[in-house]
Length: 375
Ligand code: SF4
Image (cartoon, rainbow, N blue to C red):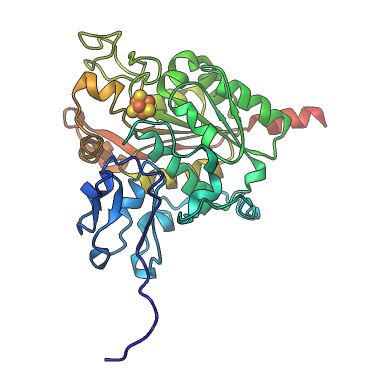
């Protein structure tokens, strides 16, 4: 045997100061390579078992974990774009990436790839351990990274609520606006500076109740915004009230006997209102979610991506949905590829919901039309 002095490549890097100890990575690691230490933080207990599948990275809601040195044969499906995003006009592909911000490195912490997009001074985030909001935000950052968007030309606008706090963690130009008004602010930004990429982050109540009117009119105008709705089926931050996306019979503090209303089908609503790109994915299917957000960012017109997530605290406790890992398993078992879903008979669709690119069309874009008047 030939001996070398080359150190073995560490397969996984973990930022333990950001890890909130939800244990999702440990539970989903098929190789049993990870464990929680005495402080409840994730550690790579058996590096020799790791096959770099990166499921732990995809399902870490704390931006705390990254798989390193992935070989070509171990590339994740999402990296190559399972939705064939290249079919959509890659109008942003030639934008140069901004160099990493020159911030002092916290002593002893690993530098993870996506940290350049985060305001590190504000980490760890304030979301509850295991909350799906971190997973949606993580998918968004991967989409931005894979498209090499210029941080100086990307604006993130968010509303109020747990999801809205995401804007505070992202190192772009960000606006944290009033409840339900994120799309109104974003419309103003886009009209003033059409060359900017504008991303809008909203929760389900923010987007579909308080901001419902702004949502349908942004869709009707087909203005070039990418809206990501964090649908956790409840108002988490304000006390667990039911929202227009809470499923029938599920409980909230304002529906203690179960919700008697039917929820909106948000993608169908936006498509009907005139939106030209509508998609849905879950936090479990994070690579699909990243691909769909990438497709939305590359689409010219109003794009809505419904990210089906979960709130283990306000929704989970009232509805006894179990741990964050249980919520992810539920998503895995109930979400279905849209093509397969459409082949099901009506009765067979019960308890299932479609994920994927649900609709993509063309229509005049609003800032182009307004720009034509101005010139
Ligand atoms: Fe997440 Fe719910 Fe906690 Fe808000 S209340 S941070 S949505 S788990």
